[in-house]
Image (cartoon, rainbow, N blue to C red; front, top):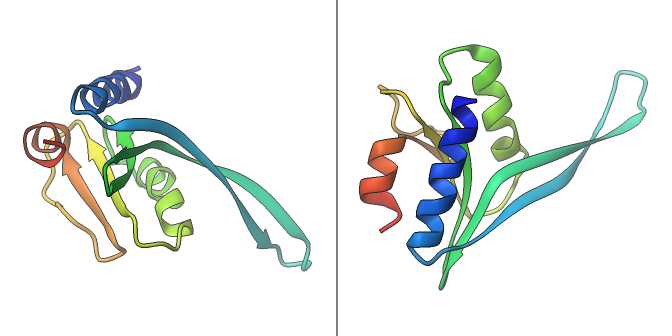
Length: 116
């Protein structure tokens, strides 16, 4: 429930700041140990665009559990492009960025500094 509230808040703030917002899905293909290809559909919470600026945004209330963190960053790791990837978390964080090419930022910092 908290995650949905974070998503709703982000969505409304992105719209308020003149971003065009979509939900993104894409297919990821991988082979298992028997060389059988499987397809997994991945989702990005928001693809936000304003002018030349484009962002992939995942929203989560808490990433302190390993499984939750992995679930939230998995789409970012599967995408191989130069679009800015941001994980917004509604909990105080020590980590602000990541060497895998995406930013992890607190909700308040994102709202006050990033989307304006």
